[in-house]
Image (cartoon, rainbow, N blue to C red; front, side, top):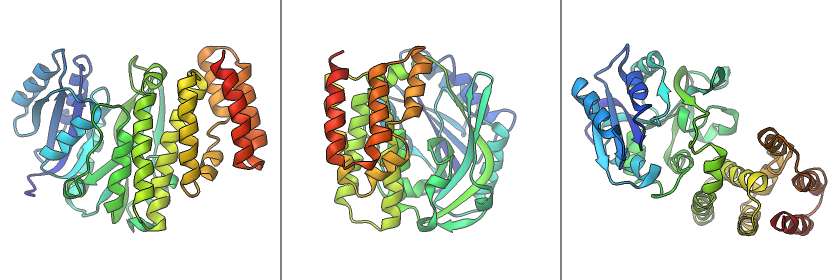
Length: 357
């Protein structure tokens, strides 16, 4: 692969005409680097997103490229970006978010002078005036590590928003995300790790993650509609963990991500849509958790079924739900000490009550 750029940033875009200019401006204002490649992957938008991207391409030739493809959802846009990227390193930026431009400039300079497979940077979650920072542990900053020795659970910023991969890791190992579904950013965090050998964390704020926009995939209404997408992602990860012999240290990293997406799926169903169909899905997921060594203990340790999600339910709905509280109380406070067979009987009884509401 010919390296023409230091960093490729891809921007999967679908009907983002209102927010895309802010996103693109963060790439080029006030600092603009000719070592940067920005690929705006327009995923069949019905609005003026494509013409906006083309206008920026005219203003910043050789840096910004507008690319049209038929709609295939997030994963297909990332796949197209991996296919077309020419940079030494690769990142994703969602079109409704933006980068800290100064942080981006610093990152490009750092990437030019290092040669590792995975670089982790800081990111920030913004919800109106509320800003929450996700950073690597100070003791780990600027040290190049053998990735086998890295515990990703100790890095709060280990997420799509903080990850920069060496592009060759993605291209040479045919990393591809699933088409037609949401939440495939979890796959982006999962599958490349099998090929990562070296790692460094940099104390640079790059990604500014914007929350609170109606229709976001992190909005609960979108999550409820996308339970099927989550299950497809979980299924693929489950079989990957089962079918591939791997070192224990890699297995633990991948298992952690597998448990995280299970946690999101369980929370969505139990807090917001305990329909009979979804409760049946939970039974299937529970069996998969049983089948992955150590996963059940991680889930309990994360309080998957726990009080924090029940509190979230009350905050959003402004009222309590006795059946859900009963479910959480029994499963978290009582069931932890019991066998999974007893747990299954308890949850089955309560599941019928929820489905029958």
